[in-house]
Image (cartoon, rainbow, N blue to C red; front, side, top):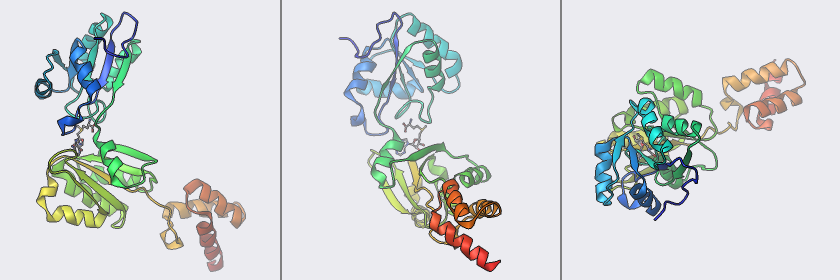
Length: 290
Ligand code: SAM
């Protein structure tokens, strides 16, 4: 049997294969087929992946491709691909390259003109987003936040007025600190969701405003265990002048110094995303007070 999508060139194909994030039933039929038929599987942790492959009765040889050897060992996989062997890339769980190794290998393979074929499947951020009930038309994935509070808060400050839904991966031993910092920077009322142990026995999806979500996790140590994804609703433009941020005011002030009020409000709205009539009212109040 041949693997669908194999290129006709003499070189082999690199398949980027997603594996389950907990529930083994999420292994796709196509993933099983590709993993059975390739000559070699490049795995993040061979000891971890051997158990997965044994479960499915797959005997394909494995070789390590983790973040520490990926750049150097990449050439070894490239040699096999160039010799005509098909290779599959897997990580410990979910989709390779998504907060997992594989980027350098994929990049090197593409640069060498080797066909790279995705075999999609589980991915924690997409699974969480699909069930969160937060706006999903536009979102950003921030991966893991810095481990230390100062770095984490600095990163969050930069994301404070991000209008798209934000998605973070977090380690269980840092989940409480992470929620505390999210609350401190994004505010107590910002809607959020914690997706824990997705596809596993103790799967929990808890959607609450940040302060309540932090309290929920604080009060139950079980919520500080297992794997988790944190989703936070994007920033929405304030309805009233009290809530117009310092940065928006600064832009409005600069424009007011240069042009008529109506034009300044319209331009500031275009730049900042804050509604035009809100800025118009703020500018009017400001002029009355001067
Ligand atoms: N490549 C993986 C993917 O496609 O989602 C992510 C690998 S990253 C090293 C591991 C992180 O993904 C965990 O710390 C957690 O934030 C998230 N994650 C993985 N599996 C999860 C699960 N079953 N439930 C919730 N989060 C999960």
